[in-house]
Length: 324
Image (cartoon, rainbow, N blue to C red):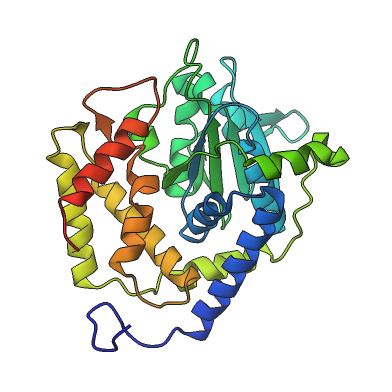
């Protein structure tokens, strides 16, 4: 990088260097569990270090929940799994105030959302009422119950999974809720060699995840704070806005990317730059994250099979018309 480039600042600080090493160690640990899915592991860790939430959309049995388990194991953090079903109540997620007859007082009993990594399994199988209980938690990092507010810890990441094909009897996530997820990924089927190795592994049927703990939650929280100092130049910010505007004026889209999408894109680009050992964001960082961050937020002019693939194509087409 030319030191006179408008994108560069100074050399990475010690805190950013620690964040880079920590991020790479987490990626390597997740890689050990979901072999052959390095790009998915990198996006998951990027979302974690950017303080965002991840939507994993794919067919059953390809390792969506395993990804979340590996991530929580790698950072040595507790994980809670919520199976979203039509009878799930909001209080099952956020918690409830219970009356104690001895003290004649109400005591708050935290729900499953009070964890570091929360897996919302098959989120589109619960009613909108239950889905909406996660919204404040994701956006504000807090829970409001009976007029009182309870802060969630940091780091806090929601990993929601859903099957995009079997839509009968489901409650598709509205655009407002999809917009809360920083990125969306698909696991895809493993490559043949990885699948052969999996079939030969007698422990593959076990639900335990053997990812080693390479760090602690407080170190991840410190890395998130350090990454917030990664420099984003005015040129990069204008490039991001131009990309957002291109999706809003695209004839292939009924709904373009929101301002929140731009904020998430910049935050994710900061994390990606830090993982690459830089203290500044390049247009390349933005381009690499464009589809994972934007495709699930836009609404194609014609939907096909409930997947976000038409959205991905439309985002790529819109971005091709913008020069960095």
